[in-house]
Image (tube, rainbow, N blue to C red; front, side, top):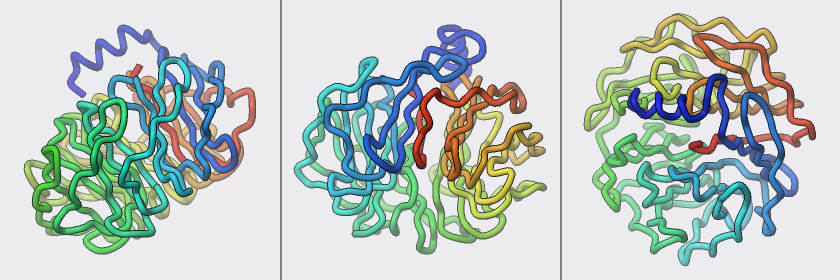
Length: 340
């Protein structure tokens, strides 16, 4: 995100983070909660009239905030609803459904396409045109990725689509222009284990990957292909990493992982800087996903133990953890802020 856009969001939202919605996917019906967010959890929106049929493992708002999409582990695999301060009627399934348990979902930056990642059946990545409903599925890439265990990720300009997966080379990147181009060459230094997530920096010049096996996070310069891997952070994440996310200004990179402190955030300036001090109140279990509010004022982590979500103010470091939502969440898997 460019600084002018970020400043506009900050001005609209006000100090401390606000004017957004926060979605959390979890085990058990109704499998999705969405809350108003303004420097803390507000009112929970009413459940959708047609709920996902199994655990929601990925959630994303469209760039204009008009739709909310969920990847689930049941036979629907992807569920999309209109969003306008609440759920509208669920959109019809695509004519060619994803044939795999859904693990991740992402809209392209212009909102014209939607990508779904799955783990149990080839081709593991399904992409559809999107215009208030699913269009005809795009042809599969000529070189398929492996099973996708996290959200697909578009570059900020929408010209690249990447997916981390659990077979070598662990990360697959494709040119994207209303369809897949020829897969980019593998990085010269691969991630060291299966990749759980990938994220482009807001300016599109760096691609960060969370993965199993030390060093647990790997970052590459990106310019129409992978550059030479950046040096590892001096203080590594603790255990297998499950997600990675950039702050909206690109100055910080967050990673969530198996072992305490469960979340690590690094300063970033053409490479990993120092790790920030841990929050005074840690997440209570294994980190599963991490997200920044669109204004960069808050950082949220879903994790494997009650209260299943921890959200903190952020200002060059963690502030005091916000109060938990008034109603306890079930076992939570994923989260996303609306674009505001």
